[in-house]
Length: 204
Picture 1: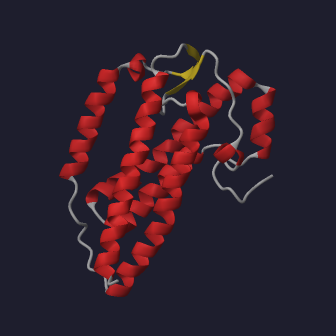
Picture 2: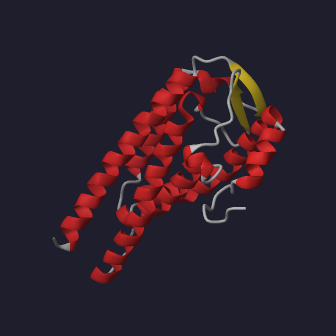
Picture 3: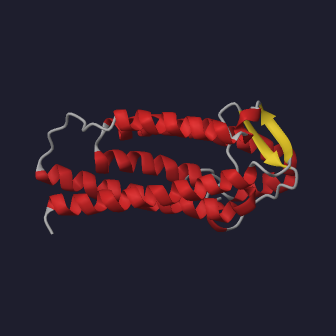
């Protein structure tokens, strides 16, 4: 298989994986909107529970990404393209798997947050198994890897934008940790002492 064909297959599979992840995430959001609200850290706006908000923001974000879907002005040799494709796949696909694993592990406990606030459910449980036994933020760690991996695979302005905003997830993770610490106290501190936030091999 030549380089162009290999690149085409990787990009196509990557697109299917992204659609599967989005479907799983939006299913969790839909279920979460119907559950009783619990503790909040920071300002968790009420529109996070509005279906219209997700329709509008998805349309705007999707349209913006389509407008930006232009190749970056990069002239790469065949060797550089192969290297970018390989490194991108090594970031993108494990990252996507981590996103899906984390989402499925959370199950009924999944919902969205913002950099300004995070909200738990009234009957929220602390999830420490599965992907959350490896790092405290598997979905966010996976999304950051997906952002940079996608940039190397697709090399478009859209993926440059996604990679640039991925570090904002660090702020969302901080808000979520504040809510979990307030809700679970000693249980959260014990979990935090044993499981690293981002890097799996830095176990304590």
